[in-house]
Length: 256
Image: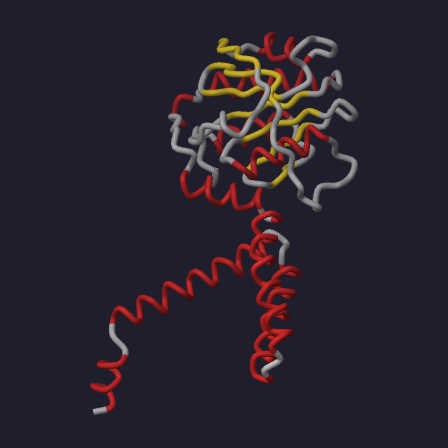
């Protein structure tokens, strides 16, 4: 009898509704924690508790203030977390345009590695972005259209100091250099050591906002780093760089 009563009061639609709300709330909390917004989350919880207490005690003026603060707080969240929200929406939509990952061949990786080795030995700063499935044209700015076959000599020439295109990123799409002198979004991560400058922050930023891989050669130390999925792998030698690119571009099993 109790089961029948519960079934009448609580149907399948109600269960789906509750689960959907739970997933939505969990997603918001997880988003705030991952984006280091836990302090804001705690402040919102505190405001909510105080607002609830003010409603119970019927403190109308205080309740009105909390109601306005809550409305302003929602706008503040959108403003503060605008980059993260854009990134999340981009991941959901996958930025529409798709690139064939299989179009990147072993010879492309070899040419990138050889150019990085040359520039690392001579401390020539470089930033190379390799697209994977996601088109990044709507994330980058100020690019010069190249559409040239990849070669070691061309990559070195682009990044050689005092040349017109050296100050920016090269974007590789498939077997070709698509763009040069690109401005990338900068990461706001507090985990990046201060010794790393704009190139490393840009490399990390593009890897946070897309599935692209970025390779950095430091002009101060010659150190080679690789950024993927918001993580920076530092101090790579050319052999390790070759293996990582082969793994990330699907030409080699990551378990091997």
